[in-house]
Amino acid sequence: MNFRPTIVAFLCNWCAYTGADLAGTSRMRYAPNIRIIRVMCSGRIDPTFILTAFQQGADGVLICGCHPGDCHYQTGNYKCLRRFKLISKYIAQMGIEPERLKLEWISASEGKQFAELVNEMTKAILNVGPSKIKSTLEVKHLKS
Amino acid sequence: MPSDLPIPKPKLKLAIYWGAACGGCCVSVLDTHEKLLDIVAAADLVFWPIAMDIKYKDVEAFPDKSIDVTLFNGAVRNSENKRMAQVLRSKSKILVAYGACAYMGGIPGLANFHNRDEIFKRVYDETESTVNPEKIRPQTEYTVKEGKLDIPEMFNDVYTLNQVVEVDYFIPGCPPQSERLLEVFTAIATGAQLPPKGSVVGANEKTNCDECKRKKTDNKVIKKFYRPWEIQDDKETCFLEQGVICMGPATRGGCGVRCVTGNSPCRGCYGPPAAASDPGAKMMSAIGTMIDADSPEEIDKIIGTIVDPAGLFYRFSLPSSILGRKIIL
Ligand code: SF4
Ligand code: SF4
Ligand code: SF4
Ligand code: FES
Image 1: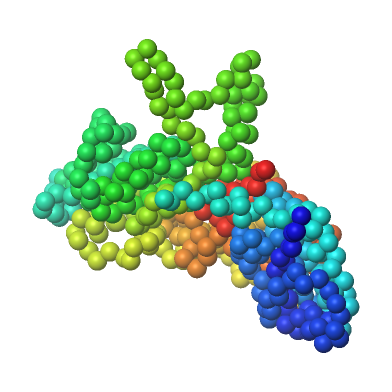
Image 2 (image 1 turned 90 degrees about the vertical axis):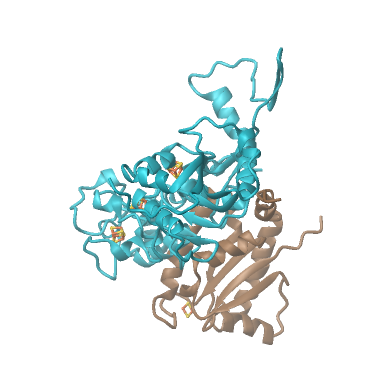
């Protein structure tokens, strides 16, 4: 099967995005499946962003912020962690596989870790297969 | 008693219909008490199955746009609900989704945690009181000696009214407060300037917390969540601050914070406020800020005390939420 997963990645500006940028400027090769959205802080990632990404057909959603203690805005990443845990519990109830939502801390110097993370997640999602959310929701349209 | 409502000439034509509903919304119209007399003085009720005997074919024979206002309560759950939604859409100038079920899917919308097969299996095979060795299932037609009967088909999903036909206005609530209905009706009867099509009417823009009289602080910190019966409510501190989940921050005001005033946490029947689209997302965001822990283990422990986030946060709104239903393959 020719399945190419799409992973939407929300990266905080100060650490994670810089880390991803480093992977790029260092010409590291990693899976081309992520679509990066830069946010100022992982604490800015509203649950709506994650749910909408899934609704629009993302096969996975990756969230990256600064390591604990390193958030540019002090506590944004803790808020993010708590929300992530709660959303994970919610999407499990909705029948979305746990592999599809991931949170990792990436510092500005961790380009290599970022590339590995993307490879790992892409592999995990290749294993679970395409997201069924969009096709499930398409059935929902009754307006004729 | 003199009527408070000016009587428009000619009288308005009003219809009230129920789809997948419990009857509470129709009763909320009766709960206008003596004001109901004002309503019938200002409007002719041309169709209202709970109160009047009119057949569907009579409604189908109405000219298009001949009903001024239809209050449609209940979700769309089967082919009969859908057909009547379409008929009433074409017969009505203003179609109002009345109540949480028509607006967001409401309590019947909780069926989107399952699908039709699962529900039929439970109801027609598994319940303790079912005896059905032949595994009979509902059929959509049946032949009797007088001829063939068509029976509505239950859909796999529960829909909001807006997911099936175009809706002009939404009046939230399970059921809507009768006072709010009167306000909206008066506005229509007096020919007042109506808000833009697609608006939520009979409710506020801001949240229940905004109006709530309970004592609250800006920085709420929560170490453990309790279900309402696990804790002695002190009757004055914000429920959330006592660790009881109250949907106030994710719910539009308009009911007068009724439940909290009656010492029960808000369950969100008025739906999300104007600034939020998905009540659960709003709630998860708010709770993420309040949980008083930074280590993953401790966070897990606290979240473990929220037993059923999906059912709690989307009690009235599952079909209209971003994900809409549970994925069942
Ligand atoms: S909104 Fe509430 S009161 Fe109205 S029909 Fe639905 S369940 Fe009943
Ligand atoms: S959370 Fe509930 S109890 Fe607290 S202020 Fe809001 S509405 Fe009132
Ligand atoms: S307090 Fe909440 S649940 Fe109770 S009537 Fe108002 S909006 Fe509905
Ligand atoms: S700035 Fe990186 S997580 Fe807050």
